[in-house]
Amino acid sequence: MKTPDAAAPDAAALLAVRDLRVSFPGKGRRAPETEVLKGVGLSVRPGETLGLVGESGSGKSTIGRAVLGLVPVRSGTIAFDGERIEHAAARRRRALSRDLQVIFQDPYTSLNPSRTIGDTLAEPLIGQGKGAREAR
Image 1 (cartoon, rainbow, N blue to C red):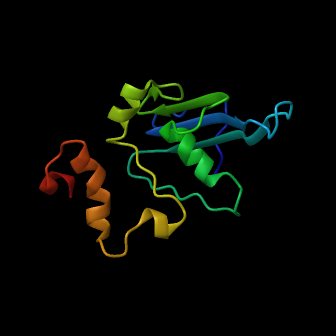
Image 2: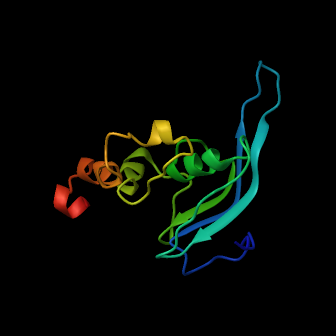
């Protein structure tokens, strides 16, 4: 996958992440912040699937959490369907959860082996008010 230029928007992208930077506070009162994502960029067009692969600690889960609004974005942009969402309010985030879902890398915490994949993927849609048939 070619990494998109951070300055060049991809108008056809459903999800566009540009120059994403995320930092976490250091341990202790005076410890400096630790920048864990440094200028990440990616785009996903309608119909495409993206899998993030890398070593443990490389930032895969942090990218997903930033897109979902679960960690604060220090700088950069995240656009979903043309709308900037990196600083979206909680109410807007709840509405976006109908369309944005992440399955994190640990299958034992992400997937329940006693449920089908269809049931697992339909669950958040049903939680948003869709009927079971429509969710599937």
